[in-house]
Length: 110
Length: 117
Image 1 (cartoon, rainbow over the protein chains, first blue to last red):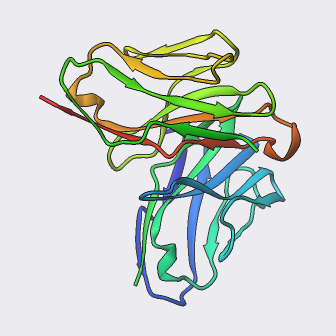
Image 2: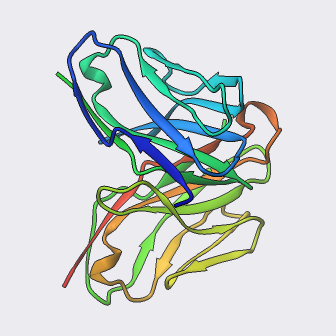
């Protein structure tokens, strides 16, 4: 099916470990985004990308790294996971000002 | 910078009640306005949108009108159902290529709606 897929859907890891969350779109939308959703904070933008090899920081980038070597993929890496990074992570793409969201990854850092 | 303020929740209504969720915005340009809905365990999906002043977006019985004079985009539905229980997000998106907001959307904090039978 066309759309945005995220993997894994659920992940439990330990403090200090590196974790990579995957995001794949079946379209060729230029813009892609990573958000985290926490109770009381709504959606917060972590990183975004305007095209392959072009990325920029959002509101809360510290502790995260992104890359975009291909238009369809936009992985998010937590270099050394912390408990404060326990959250639900959403990837999205954009076309004509509308955003299309993936189903989310629920990450728990113990 | 751009911002979106929406009505705090949670909102609890009985089935067939009238729904209003208020949303106001500040923006430097002429943004497009959106309502997204998030059902439990899912990502956000577009509910409706309006791209210019006085436009009315509508979908699934929900409506919202782009009011430039009051910088508002309130969501309404005449008769809610249990299946409307979800989190609703108001959002704006600046035109691509303008300033530091280029390509990005600004979201409100979300309003949780629970509809009881």
